[in-house]
Image (cartoon, rainbow, N blue to C red):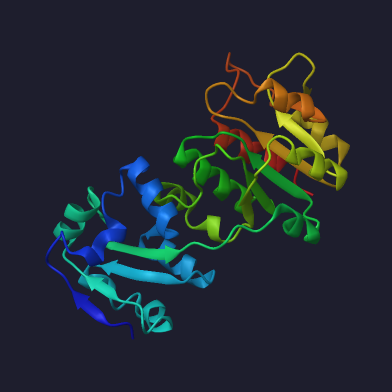
Amino acid sequence: MSPLVPLDDPADSRLADYVQLREVSLRRLLEEEHGLFIAEGDKVIRRAADAGYEPRSFLLAPRWLDSLKDVLEKWPDTPVYVVSEELAEQVTGFHVHRGALASYKRRAAVPLTELLRDAPQRIAIFDEIVDHTNVGAGFRAAAAMGVELVLVTPTCADPLYRRSIKVSMGTVFQVPWTRLEAWPGDLELLQDNGYVAAAFALTDDSITLDDLAARHDERLALIFGTEGHGLKPHVLEKADLTVRIPMTGGVDSLNVASSAAVAFYATRP
C-alpha cells in the first residue's frame, strides 16, 4: 500500500501539484514544466491507472482510502496525501466535492506517422477548440461512437487539463490521440494515407452529412473548428469536402461537441 501522509498545512510544498486548479494559465505552465496532469474523482483516477499512467501522488479525503485501495496498492511507493475536504478546497481553489485527486505523469507525444500504422478508419480532428468542456465532450463522443484516433491542432485546448478529463469521464485515456505539429500541413499526410478530409462548415459548396455517410469512404478524417468562427479558410482549402448538418427550426449550428457526436454516429462503419 502507498504510504499515507496526513497533511494539515495548505502551504505544504508537497501539495504543489494541486495548487489553484482553476487558474488555467498558471496550471498550463506548471503542468507543462513538470509534465503532469490532474485526475479528479475516483472513476477518473481509476481509469487513468487502468490506462497505465504513472501517478506522482494522490490527494484524498479519508473516505476514499478504502474504495481506491486496489489502485493505491499498484503504486506502493507513491505518496497518498490524506487531507480534509476543507484543506483540499484551500489548496485547489474550489470545492472538491468528490474529495479525490491524483497527479499523474504525462507521456511523450506519439508521432502521427506511428499512430497511422494501425490504419484507423475514422479520425477526428479538433482545430482551435478553446473550451476545455467541449474538448472533453468531443473525446467522450469519439469514444462512444468508435472513433479510433483524435488529433488536436497546436492551438486546441489541452485534452489532459483537469476539466477536459472530467467532462470526458476519463475517455481521453482510452482513445489514442496526439497534438499535431504542422497544421493544416498534416492534412497532406492523412490524404497521402488514403483519408478523405471532411471539414464541417457552413459553406455554399458543402454537402450534407447524409451525403457524406452515403459515400461510405473507407477512411475519413472529420474536422471540427473553433466555437466562435469555425474553421479558417486556409483549412477549408486543404480539405477534400466541406460538410453541413441539416437543421430545422431556424437553427444554423450546434455546439461543436454536439456536432461531432452527430457526425461520429452518422459515419460509423
